[in-house]
Image 1 (cartoon, protein in one colour):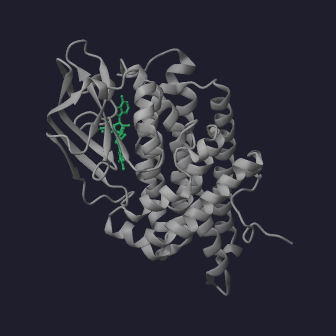
Image 2 (image 1 turned 30 degrees about the vertical axis):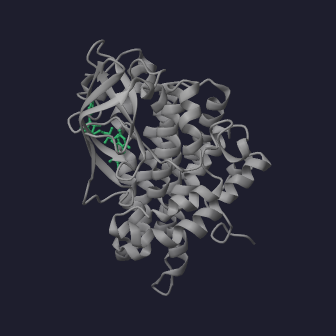
Length: 398
Ligand SMILES: Cc1cc2nc3c(=O)[nH]c(=O)nc-3n(C[C@H](O)[C@H](O)[C@H](O)COP(=O)(O)OP(=O)(O)OC[C@H]3O[C@@H](n4cnc5c(N)ncnc54)[C@H](O)[C@@H]3O)c2cc1C
């Protein structure tokens, strides 16, 4: 009899992977192998040290896994990968390590999609090929020290046009990859028309500095930075031509928020798999703790959260692929799946008893990483307000 403890993919109880067409499934399996062979051995040490392993950039470059959502720029200039594959890749990465998945999501999602959706064709041709090869690494700078959830209204970073250049001034906070990124997409408010615009800023531009945020307790391998912009001069040619207000930024977030929900699913799966294995190995009262009803309750509730979240995200990806995809669809998934993730990592940690708080057993890393994912790309509260407005017609934003 096959039990789901020894199955290749114990968490895929309903065979969601089977929804991928064969070619895309191969890419998912390549992602799994890449994470197992190239990434997993680096994780524990770098997470503890709080640094991103730079050697991973070269490994990703050789992997053929970058740029796949962008038609003509990814692997062998193939057609764009489906949203289902892109989502499952984010899940697969987070199942091993959410910091690496976040590094990848910031570059391959937030930064590249800003260029794809916000740039004109000449700008796409200029930046996307290098980014798809990871010759240039991208970052995405929206959040500020004083404005997080209310960034749409509160953005303090300004852009002032001066002939053929723009002068950017202000500060950004939490910007992932920014300590080593080659280019940072910076959002700033045009002092002339009060609208948000996007700018591609090179790391060596005078007046631009990025300082690593130390002492994080979550996603420690992601290098987040405080950015200072002191009269940074950017040519008009480096202003993303198709971003003319925050509405355009919101469209980018709509697409990437679903990716974060997939990431949360991956974290659940990683934690659940660890807990399931531990429960079958750890003996108390002369039997594996997996044999106790109360432990089985935690495992089964975890599998229920994973399975229901996976079903939700499968259908969300179908909506995205069909072009029927609204802010509230993405927000509901982000809010709901990250809340389910928080339950699962806590139950997994619980099953490890005291060992659940020691990094050597890995589950503590999943437990800690869940917290940042719960809060970034729109907190649960903000995404709830987006859905609340959509279903009631009443805006509860204050
Ligand atoms: C590890 C990490 C990586 C990140 N990476 C990036 C990045 O690469 N680029 C980037 O631009 N940003 C990034 N962020 C920023 C992230 O998106 C913000 O942290 C997030 O949007 C929340 O903003 P805040 O932290 O300022 O919280 P705040 O906005 O200060 O919120 C504090 C609390 O108040 C609640 N709240 C606020 N307003 C309301 C309201 N109207 N009603 C009810 N509750 C409310 C919030 O939900 C939250 O619980 C990252 C953050 C982290 C932690």
